[in-house]
Image (tube, rainbow, N blue to C red; front, side):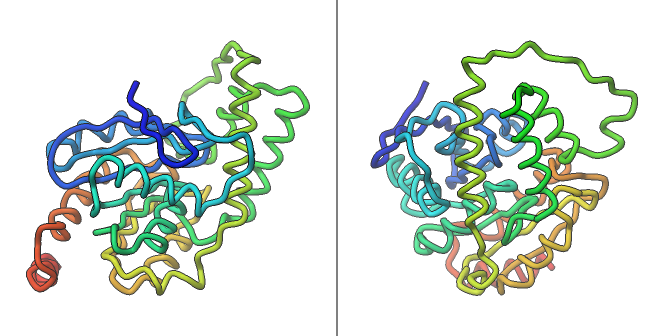
Length: 276
């Protein structure tokens, strides 16, 4: 399995395809395998970099709490370590918070930004529900049940039509590590707020949001689009917090093509204008 030492962390990552680099950042407690359906749709158009953030997956990190800034620095360190001084960034949900922080802390590196199902400040209702679910795990519920409950907030009513819950066997040895990493990511997420810093993001930005998202209501995506001057907003009909790759990949490819690293800014602006 490919790893790269970046400062104090050892980052698990995979790469696919050729072309301009695009790093995909997963959401809360997610890992690089969350993108398995997206990769085949975009790898012919860009050099895709997947990673496990510290606190989840197979990335190794010190046994302590971390911040969103450190998660962002991990992304920059990985991309620089792979030889990319300029790259595109796509983040989903919490990964979108990390992506915003990358654009703020490493502005000279980020060619464009794609934010899916994300926000400037974690939604209070969703955070409350997640804390309640975490508490149930502390009281004896399994991580598998926790994830099933999380998914009901991320997927739509139509997805669950006719479905029955199938209990999964638990692995208590893995559960402790997963819970600890989740809680650390959640603490980093709770401390994040970009609302008053959005205007500092100057790179071209695409905001993608599902029209039926109940975890992060669409108006929160709209707030991001309003706050970043050079941004576009795309709504995905029938999608919840988890947006099916087949519903959004064409928007991603089009956006990347219009904001190529290789294109001079004057040409880029002209092409963007023609595309409207």
